[in-house]
Amino acid sequence: MLAFTIFFLLTGLAAPPAGGLVDRYGVRGVIAAGALIAGLGFASLSLMQSLWHFYIAFFFIGAGMAAFGQVPASAMVSNWFVKHRGMAIGIMSTGIGAGILVLAPFIGSFLIPTFGWRVAYFALAILVWTLIPLAVFVVRTKPADMGLYPEGIAGPEDMAKAQASLATAHGLNLKMALSTSAFWLLAITFFISGFSSLGVIQNQVPHLQDIGYPLAIAAGALTGLGLGSTIGKFIFGWLCDRIQAKYACAISLVLLAVSTLILMSMGPTSPMAIMWLYAIILGLGAGGWLPTMSMLVNVNFGLISYGAIFGMISLAQGIGGALGPLVGGYMYDTMSTYQWAFALFLALYAIAIPAILLVRRPRL
Image 1: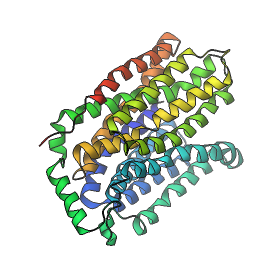
Image 2: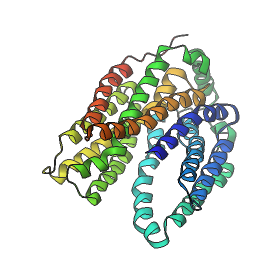
Image 3: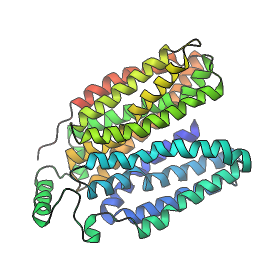
């Protein structure tokens, strides 16, 4: 849990500077540098001899993944798409859930048993490093870099109107955004979302074992989570093009709360279908964070300082994600049950849902 804490904390802490670099220099160099750093972290794990090495490696992996993950990816997609921006972000973010579905079984069932964990970590390093040539030679921050217009923009007149609207209606820099209630409501919402959802996700397998499920079956919940997350990201991206992003975010939080309730009600005699229902609903709810966070930053603050503002919201979520699993584990150690930890996570959703519904676009 401490390694996960370091990872999520560094992912959050590195997000604001990564976002600022994206705003200033574009995504290509940021993605390439992040892939290099994270790859070095994975490669070093293949040589690991002690526990401190394990922790330091996750320090670099977390920082590197912040630089090639959701901050530059969502910024790039937001620049390229206008009319169907929510769906585009949803499709882009399905890679996270798809990665769980494809890579986790491959690594856990084939790579580690066949070649050992050292080779598996080095294989992950090589996989991450393949992003470097893609970033340098393929990725472009804006369609204008290739002489194109964003999707939904027909020509120069539409582009001029869009730029004028962005500049005059809701184009805020980071300093201006920090002075708005919208920013702090978003920060509170996604802090709670990270705290509670990752608190459940990282503690679900030991809880299911405690109530009588074999380890292999309990670990199967991760497959359901990955499947639900993949579907959820696409659905919530699509939904953000049709309703206000804050309502889509509230729906995702409700799904997370419902899944926590189902988990708390499960017992040793509960049918397997209930566990899969829990895992799928949890995945669907967890799939909503990236599309809704990106669209909420777009809608409320524009693209002028998108990377920096998105990075700050990601920092709040990262701190929450770092603390939630630790708090859940500590409460289990002191109370010999996860029920009180899950009750805490559930109560926090009751704060996050009204908070996101109170968000209003700042007025200049």
